[in-house]
Image (cartoon, rainbow, N blue to C red; front, side, top):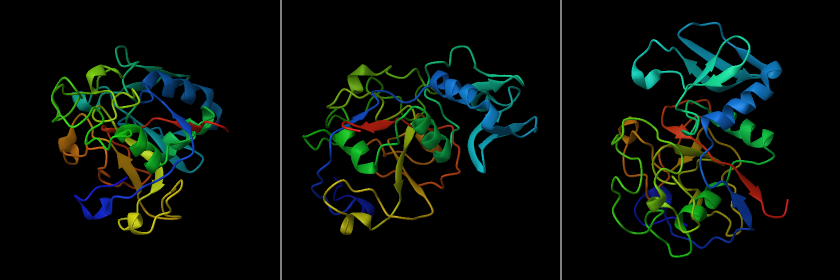
Length: 250
């Protein structure tokens, strides 16, 4: 785990993990909509016509935006006052505009959990310490949805040539992904060698993998060791989604 490239990735170190399952693809708009509709009675929705914050208790979990805004701010999931629906054509795209709290709540609802940072890196890096999920080949348009080459998210699994060692899809590109851990810049320097969980507390959560519009933050985090730009758990972004995991022997 880790690399020699940047301070927060150093030092490279051996990590042992208990067996776990992790989703092959990122959670889609359709999947997240099912979660929202199943929890309508517990959600609060702000009345603002421009942006509607969806909260579960005190935590913001998802942000609805107006259909009259620019293309990049068009609703992927809509609310008609009774139920949530997915805009046609976006059903199988990764859900974005979801906070860490929303990702965590979805995984709990699905009887799963967010992967730890170590689990995410293992799933992306495999057993051969590859630079990118697909290997050491420099990213191109056949391997991942990166650098605004499409101008939007794509359906999950649209880049099978970019599959990881364990056949996971979109571990680089499409949507960057929340993981469970709090971010600690020097955490690797004394993290446990077995099932590390990240710091006990913090202000920002780790985000892994690169996004379709990497210019929204910065490019280069498609590497399997890259720790992206940590974000406050309340953040919602057009470039950040998630996938879930579960212990192999729950």
